[in-house]
Length: 282
Image 1 (spheres, one colour):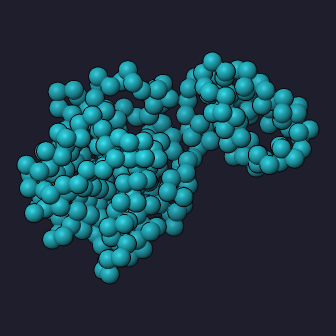
Image 2: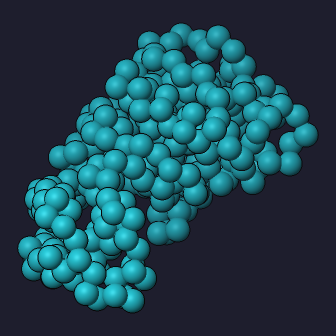
Image 3: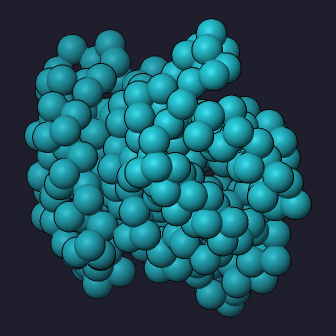
């Protein structure tokens, strides 16, 4: 079958589910990942053929896309901060906004002429910790997650990106005190309230792990409050606490940090939403 004909099948099958540009992007991502065929290859040779097995592989991927499964799960990996990360149903697919949080930390600490100690709480795929490790080679980085399955993915991603991270399976809500002190504590914890589910796409609702996403409506800052209190005694002088936050609870989260003795800075992401918060102890 001609690859161009398979592309038309994708467009027709998914026309009511995704914008045309997104379907084309999906198709090109799949042909690149599965067969090493690039966009330019198809442009230069519209008669490009694929065999029966390749057609079957694309048909299976098409069926999964029709069910709104994330393209990253179908391919098996995604890109974050210029690195490749294995992802599946056990971890959140890293979002572009989170790259901005990583960049903020790097802007603040890249010129630090010392070995930094960094803790990533709720590491998931390890995208934050690993991206920091690649760009702060002198840093000693640890990462915590409650999910054993998520940590299995993170433990694959670290050596795949040529870094060493200490991973620990622990429930941060059960901590009374962190056992070490750190220059940086960073967290992208669960922050989506149940009431916000109606705003979310099926590919997130049905395929991302709910424990990494959702918090109860009546206590949405549970993780932020706990981590902030732990950071009060665990940050070294001049240390910083960084959060990715719920845009709808930005002021409440900032106020909570201030009440715990932190001087704060709130930032918007590239989409204009309050998404990042930094705290420094007075």
